[in-house]
Length: 333
Image (tube, rainbow, N blue to C red; front, side, top):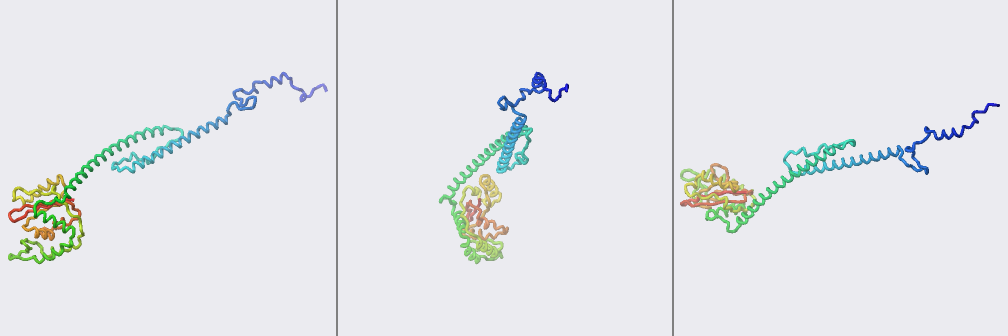
């Protein structure tokens, strides 16, 4: 009975106070999360982690926006490049593999930005060069168009006709047959009766004058067939600028060298599509045989030129040598 139960022994109060104030059980004021009213004073570890995660999410969102903007810029550059009519091989401008980057490193973005600026500058330079070239082309075209308009006004004048009577006759009849090709069929048909064989056995066309033929009636029939299939076309405009000048020496009228030399001189300023020379004494006979075109070379160049719908201008001039007419005819589109 003299022994006291250990369970009933109360600890010394002084010791209890010491236990309560033991440094090992004290909470660090820095780590305390609540004040005396139970309010949070310092963020907990979870809150710190949440804030960090939010910051990462915001950064990721910003990076996604940057990547989206980059891709849009790439597509815009590709569209601009594809719409340019550029014959040069500028593959380096095409963003077939757009630059991408991860969230840990944005250096690629700065690199892309600097390269993109260089590319933009190069595009601006090319655009400026193209604009300058286009302006030069437009100016040249304007000059050409003005030149054409001025010439067209002069050339379409009612007084714009060949000077000599022979050339006027040929010019007017060429436009008559172009305006109504079928109307000339009857004239060719009736002309077949003028095909003769002279005393020397030569095939000739005897109308107002005698002209030697090469094939005769088959070529006349061929001309009729062509006229039947030919539609109405534009009348030709007389252009004195493409006329071959008459030589000072009458003997040069038959010179092929003279004709070719003068044609080359004209071509330096005006385009010549075709040309030929005709020497005959009667304009009516001359025109009939131009359409029939029965020559030994069988080129039919005269008929083809007169009935060519692509031609727009004609130059024609002639000179009288005794009883003979020397005539130069040129055509231009």
